[in-house]
Image 1 (cartoon, one colour):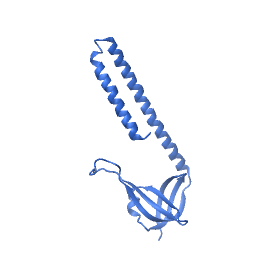
Image 2 (tube, one colour):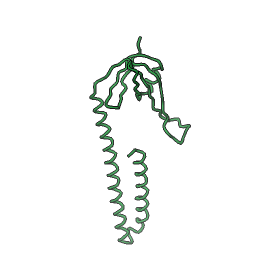
Image 3 (tube, rainbow, N blue to C red):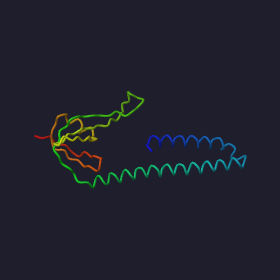
Image 4 (spheres, one colour):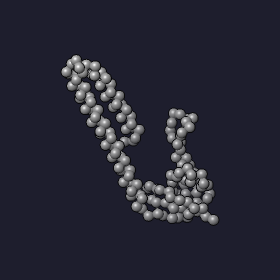
Amino acid sequence: MSGVVKLIIFVAGLIIIGYGMVITFPWFIDEASNGIWFILLLLLGAFWLIGWIVSLLKDFSGLFKELDKLVDEPILTETATVISKLYEKPESDDTNAVDTIYTYFIVFEFHDKSHKKFGIDFEHYVLIGEGDTGTLRYKQLQNKLLFIDFQLRQ
């Protein structure tokens, strides 16, 4: 389940549980039956929140396990040529946002004509140009790639 879907479920749950608690709370003192509903909603909210937190922790632990595996992989070094530079703008309703964070990619071509696309930080993105040839250092775990460095050929 994606992070956005989990966030929507989280907010919807908060609204439903909060609304139920607001409706039952004024009668909490007057009627015992509404007091029970209030306590049940409070318990439901607590269990729901704990479940949501456990779900997020489970997702993060899986991500960290993948990163640990990638860190243990050997560093690969190959001569490569930059064939394209790409960036993706996140989907947003606010097209004029000042704090928009782009994702940058560089596609390298190797001596065997194969291509690999690496996610890259902005500092490297601006220093590397299309057509540049040099030594690429990276790690690979199955289909996951980790860019380490690119040294231009002198």
